[in-house]
Amino acid sequence: MGHRITTQSRGKGGPTYRAPSHRYKAALRHVSSGEITVHGKVEDIEHDPARHAPIALVRLENGSKVYMLITEGMGVGDSVAWGAEADVRNGNTLPLGAIPTGTFICNIEAQPNDGGKFVRSGGVQAVVVDKSEGRVGVTMPSGKTKWFNDRCRATVGIVAGGGRGEKPFVKAGKKFHKMRNTASNWPRVRGVAMNVIDHPFGGGGHQHPGRPKTVARGTSPGRAVGHMAARKTGLSKK
Image 1 (cartoon, helix red, strand yellow):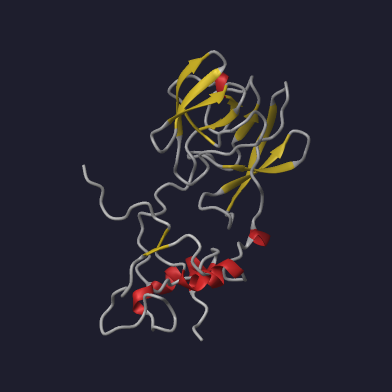
Image 2: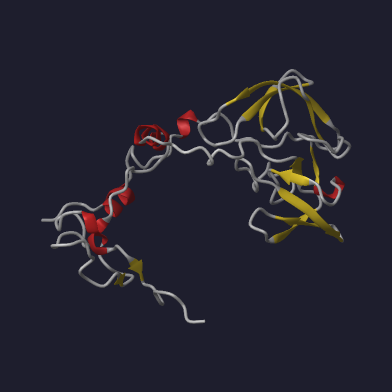
């Protein structure tokens, strides 16, 4: 009897593949301001295991504390605000309709008052490029222009944490500690490098799949590796 392959273990679940959400600090939703402008002050900048960008601990005027996604240039002691009447400056959150064209923004809401859904990764930003009849056109990090309701809110600025991928790990031990904090199995062994009992592509005198990589949609879990019900494979003809 063969061993359970990696895809079967991942599908069953377990500590290796379960996201460590018990360590996450906050959901980082925009403060509900309504028709008024809410002001706050950055008290600390912290690390959140849930993301690669740092987050800011902000004390609001009423004394409560919230976490927010921090933008480049923000620091401890800076003032931030949420609302349509807030100044258009780094770290403030306003409706898209109140943000001028050409402004860098992040943490954009998909629907008004949903708290923020898009452009939240470290070092990314979007740009307000057009406005038309209650809608605002925004160029996303992918280069695509997406249209939002002008009441959707966004934070002015670029998400902090950019350039994190420029410094190499150098040692496998450092990469091990990074991957240990994620819900993934690392290092990942190639199927052709395994023994024949461990994977459908394993075994042989040299490393090769030994069988077609395309499998049917209803294939049993132990054989479901490669191109699943692929319409076509390989390079397309131009």
